[in-house]
Image 1 (tube, chains in turn blue, red):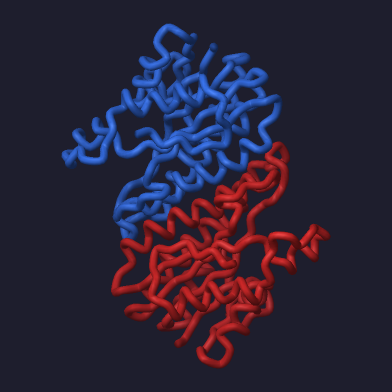
Image 2: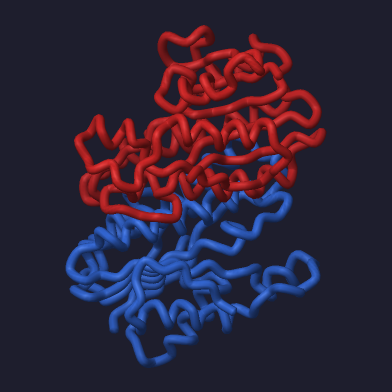
Length: 197
Length: 197
């Protein structure tokens, strides 16, 4: 398969590329240092990416920023960034990207476990992740030409917890999270929230 | 209790006011024809409302617009309206309103069953409703002074289905939906998605 991987230079993105190995032809895209440059928060940048890459069998998005900070400290700008980047950016991957996906292909987005398992500091992230889960369930019903749409909702990455100095309990290594994306791309499910375990 | 009811002139709002009856002092607010005028999509209008009304024991929001139309017809503007109005408008009711709520008071928002039960045409509404459910679960963890935060997630209203000429199967009359808001305001739950049945 020919697969567009948005967020290819991130911790999850690199693990996804490794999990696909040499079975598929990966087109790496990202904000920095990837072969294809794209800014998820900029609709024109996304549209330009789809204009360049031609037909693909799958799109995988493992990208998007959202603000994690106490409710009382989340500013208008923090909500605008979270909703414009990780949430609407990935919604636009579906909206703008479907026309580039081959019949019976797939689109896979990334949400996160805060959607259903809240934590202090996670109000904006929970909003974004739950919104992505709700959007995916609905969008899958209307995707044309047998195209499947799923969202992977990973827990904290072990790598992230280590980087910010938190206990790694409950975390999952990116290499295990990546398996959920492989399952979405190579399997037959649609409209699913896939929770890596 | 002194209760601010945003969306007081809507079908659900009127039913909530009727369900509270004379037990509480209701401050009706809405875009049109309510005692207090407020535009949920306008942060300045919301802040001005909270500046005027003084201390309340509860805030109930049964307001907010979101676009219901086929995925391929949902425009950038439809998503912007849905996210700016029903979603961010109600998030701002919590953010800006908490300081006006008395100790151990409550804030109750409105999502909808499309959050978890998708239908064709509902991609933006599912996003908004699921986002509100996720936000509420998280915000409840951080609300100060014992303030509770819940969201009511009603199915289609019988009244709405009748108005648009759809079969009323699966719908619920606004009078029954209103009971969920009473339960949220007068009960002890927090961080809950309340599904009227």
